[in-house]
Length: 170
Ligand code: GTP
Ligand code: MG
Image 1 (cartoon, rainbow, N blue to C red):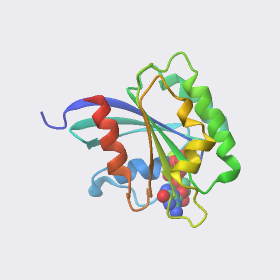
Image 2: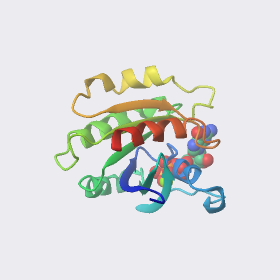
Image 3: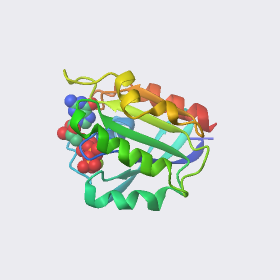
């Protein structure tokens, strides 16, 4: 049918990584916001891709709000973890938060994980391979995962990432 099956996608990652910008870019042009501000708490939004109707839980990545993420683990049918590829200093913090999430009992076992190596346009951006190594993604065995470079400002890479996710959900 129109829009297809409904899927709850949890969008997490550190503050300033580009989560809200990513979701805006996945929405139809007429519904995209011009300005994106740091998220307070979280927002719920919707977009359609790959024959699926996504309900996105756009969480704030700010330290004081990260405790909210776990409240949505149980309902999450897919997770998008957004990384600022140029934020080398906080990659270790991103790894900590990723590990916390993946070790949490409420997150469903087979739930697919898409990692967006965002801000690939920045000259100091690390490659997806370097990020995968820093986050030790090869240790993730109990769920499908994929890392895709993206530029949320242009939308570059987002379709590829979401299509991979959709393929794991059909
Ligand atoms: P919180 O809501 O605070 O957790 O942040 P967020 O992850 O939602 O980040 P947001 O989408 O607000 O983007 C933060 C800043 O990064 C904004 O100024 C965006 O315009 C910018 N930004 C997002 N994606 C990209 C990208 O791919 N490349 C570049 N150069 N800038 C980006
Ligand atoms: Mg945000």
